[in-house]
Image (cartoon, rainbow, N blue to C red; front, side):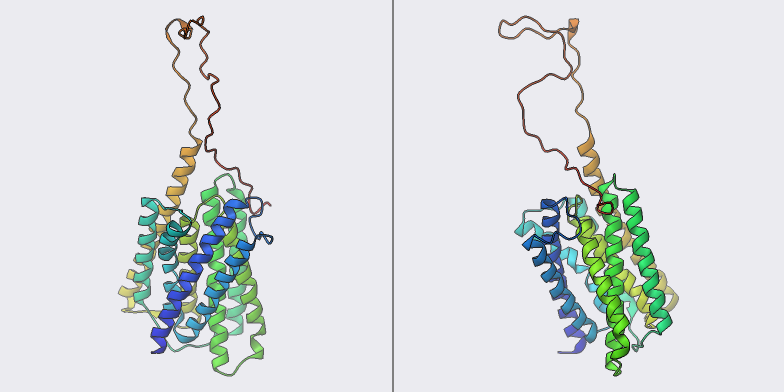
Length: 329
């Protein structure tokens, strides 16, 4: 088996592991709304950590076997695996809009994958690594502040946290590829700062992804994360590793179009969740007043004054869950 084929196979296995971890994370988020980041006392959360860790190990090996621009976009298949797996194992069925959004985002990323060409791997300079780490940290903090400002809109807050998580995971993969390139050239000890950045970004990505599932379902945050992750990594691969788009200017224009298609898929996923939230907020309308302003007599009882909101037997209804802001908590 060639190194390229092995990297594809490992990437697919990694996507399945990540999908399983995301499903468990979403279930933990539903059952522990008061602990958005790290519900350490829940065994299920640790199972999600193990699944994500397995996905990460397979991803690292795939990066060692293949180019960054190939391995990262294949991670977008996580959402394609997650939706049917969630329906099969936990009965979490996605709506038609979510499926359309997931397929649209995946098609956009597949086009982006086909247009990015690999080149001879080269290690970024120390200044490039420092700049990438600082820009990523600043972006993640800005997204967390934006999520805090939109805490009244769980779907928007979730997408912002998922973008931050995807950026952290994407840059973690970039630094992983950097370390792999250095080690292939015999450089080991000089990569201790890069290994530290990998650990910090991977941990931040895990915690932010857990928070993004709270009150937002599975499809929207997971699709956002799986799209942002390869886009960030592909951009870094072009700027830091010398990877380029195929077919020159035309290929670059097509790549931009594919990115727009992928973004449109995310908009569909987000809009479905926002529509669900708005439907949950629609108040029950008051009844129309009967003629004469009095209720009709029933079973020999005297007529009563009209009450637009009559009291009746208590019927259990599904009330929208109240959530705390993960950034404030």
